[in-house]
Length: 173
Image (tube, rainbow, N blue to C red; front, side, top):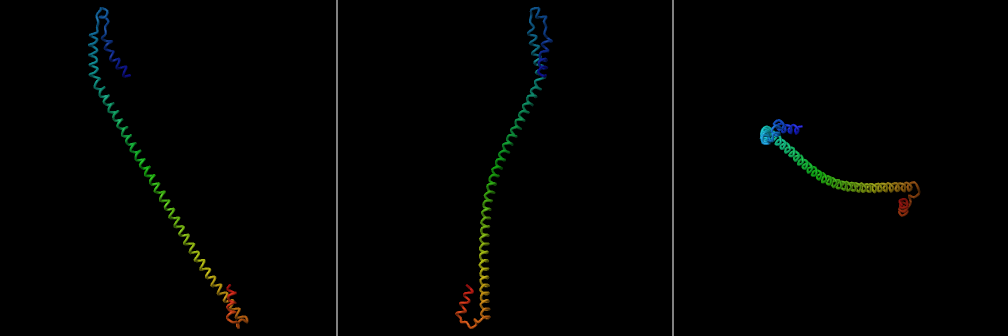
């Protein structure tokens, strides 16, 4: 739309000042047309040049501002990417440290459980040995008690020592 108005404004003086009268008489009106055109261009330049310059300066400044914004966004994006990569690497290192710590902890727990089981087994063995000793003593007491009861009930009171020891040995064995 602007281009068509601009073209019409340029061609309007040509149409208005053109005259066929001199052309039909054999003369040319080139010089007056040229002068009219130069005056028109000068007036047009006087009124339009400054707004056009300002428009293009503003447009250039706007483009430069947008370009700078895009570059700032690009820098911010690159920085964010680098930070994200650094965080990722730190997370990987932390994950590896956690895995190593978990392995060490599991080994320590396994050793601790093995030690507890070993101690518990030793305690159970000691307890079992003590029980066996107590039962053995009780068995000996019962046996001695039975032998003595038999001796006192029966005719074995007149027995000599050798027979008495043999009798106790038979009962104990």
